[in-house]
Amino acid sequence: MRFEPQKRHRRSIRLHGYDYTQVGAYFVTVVTKDRACLFGEVVDGGVRLSSFGEITCACWRAIPEHFSNVMPDEFVVMPNHLHGIIFINVGARHAVPLPGLSKRFGKPGAPVWQRNYYEHIDRSENELIRIREY
Image 1 (tube, rainbow, N blue to C red):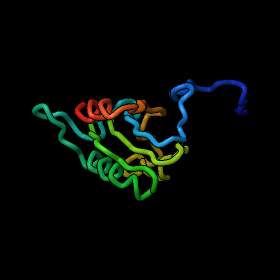
Image 2 (image 1 turned 135 degrees about the horizontal axis):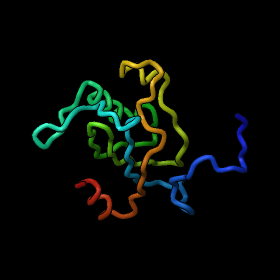
Image 3 (image 1 turned 90 degrees about the vertical axis):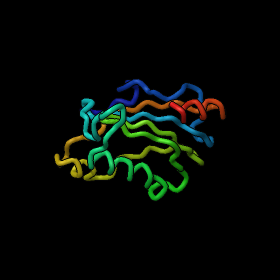
Image 4 (image 1 turned 90 degrees about the horizontal axis):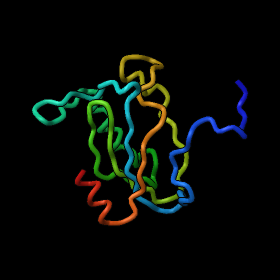
């Protein structure tokens, strides 16, 4: 299939007119492929993480080791998704998952994450506090 740049292939979730090269805090939600509960289960009103959930936590905390200008903040791993706040100190750039990441989940080559993600730009201290409490 030939790429045709004049055609939109998927809807952008980026905020129209927002300068993504500025310093900012972003609230992101990333969901597993087909909403599979890979990361744990809900038990007595809380999440009991699986080993895959623990790996996801470790990867979130290790973000600064891979991206020196990105600092993770509050986050929560749920059975089939992750919510987190990240601070980006320079312009956004495209990042792709490390090769072989899905091998950790027992299915070499199988995708772990769904294709897109949700983001929300935190524009004030009050908004950041509200999202951290969420």
